[in-house]
Length: 440
Image 1: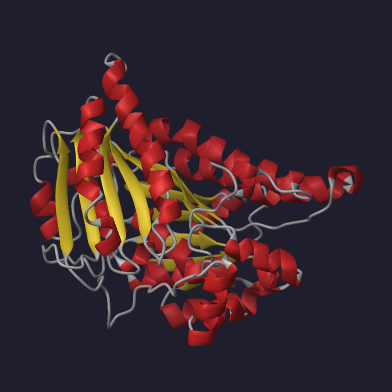
Image 2 (image 1 turned 180 degrees about the vertical axis):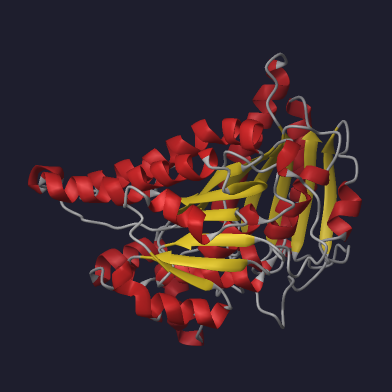
């Protein structure tokens, strides 16, 4: 459904009226397209603190953005060396003169270090960067986004290169106000793809709930990036599933993910193993708890959480997930902030976050597989189009970008998690919500 308010604010009368009334003024977001794969404008590289991150200039050069200070499309501030309060003054001094000049739809990425367990001064100011970034994201305006990338190791920029490529591109248009930790890749690998335009060449990806909506967009995006896609959905959606798979040059797997033998049947369908497993299938059965029968509760928990746990355990135990593989699950801001009438759904999506945080270190150590989650906010789908008008408008406007996201925004974030260079990104839950005002 078209966002008529967004379109109206793009007209001269709309701009005048919304300014006079103090109403939100969303800026159209530019997403990735084959004809315009990069941001429009130069990249400004700044440094605050005592030391600079080695190899950062070279990594930034590989993003495809040319260096420059005039009307930058992106600013990267290296604050990994900030270790005391005077370093935070340098953060202010670096960004204060340039923040107004960043192009509409531009990016601000702050690189920080993990807070120290032994130096409470360093820990305090590095944690301070989180508050700084979240606040700047809420005031940047004009479609600009702000993100903090926290590096566990600060002796090299190599592990962060995939994340920088994502954040400094149109693919991250609806990701803002986030804190992303990048650690060591280990067996999960951190090598760049041979062809940056097709980083998933030679890899097999399975997407559950792929027949429509976000799942279909994820399947399309992974196929665009070179993956051989196995599209899974319930048997009643087989016709849509087959059409999608044929269009993408992949294969369809009609299967109820809640079946006890779903893991075994998936393994049989991919004899050479899986490189990417995307848990996207999910349902809602909304009702306030006082009015919610047990069946509505259990159905949501079974599809959204229990099936994810069972199939993940099965595919890891059978070795179906290849070393260097990626598991990406779909959480929700409802699992972070809660939502009236969705105790079942919010419990299931918070459960996904718990799964990611617990399994990620063990899956990496034992299987060489990373585990992450996307947490969508208000995304324009058939489901949100059916939401009553005033609730839908509130969902659209209650974020720093003042608009709803698109399924492709979730898909692009999933594709970044799935990439071969993202081995250092593990145990992360990244909200794709335009920095929703709900939750943290």
